[in-house]
Image (cartoon, rainbow, N blue to C red; front, top):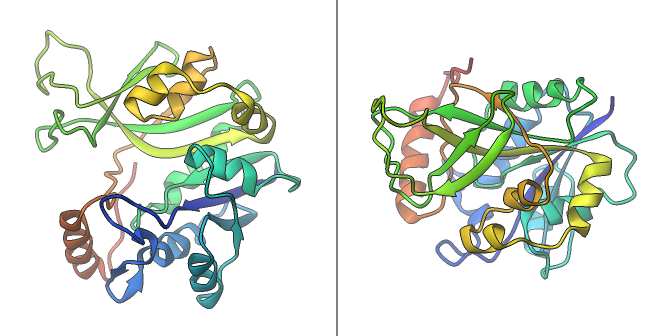
Length: 248
């Protein structure tokens, strides 16, 4: 089974313009993602998919590989699909470009899910705890069925952690895996109402009746969406030196 990791990196960001190139501990954020994903055992290839030549130049400068994709693409998954068009591969992993501390073992574990031939798309979740603000619209909650397939994704749930009157609270971790065949099909699907209103591309698959297998982990992602996140990421990077992130 041949697998490829793709890091979609869009230059234009409303809250943080040029986000992939912002510095964390004196390196572009995108370079942190690349270096951590490069440590994966189960990826045969790794590329960055971007809409901007400045990002291509920066990636090639630190020794990575990047491809230029259309700026008109609808979502990260669609950008990944364009980037791998024509590449012979079985499994594609979409690694978020704003996750500078992504754990390589999480990526490897996601690839391994596809040894089950019935899976076409997969993602990851963790249990919420008292440190999570579930009303934050940047926190995406997931409901799953008894077979650990996603039923729905939504932003800003308000149920209280530990309240036994509500179902388990699962927080989505924004990493996706797809079979190459399904990724081609995904790009051809019409965008759906919940994808557009919630701004969650994975709802396109759910609303069209496809199953997304969920991998549960204890890994806590630190995605960078705001200036405050960037400050936190720099603090975390300084504290992380010489240590590893725990993942189960």
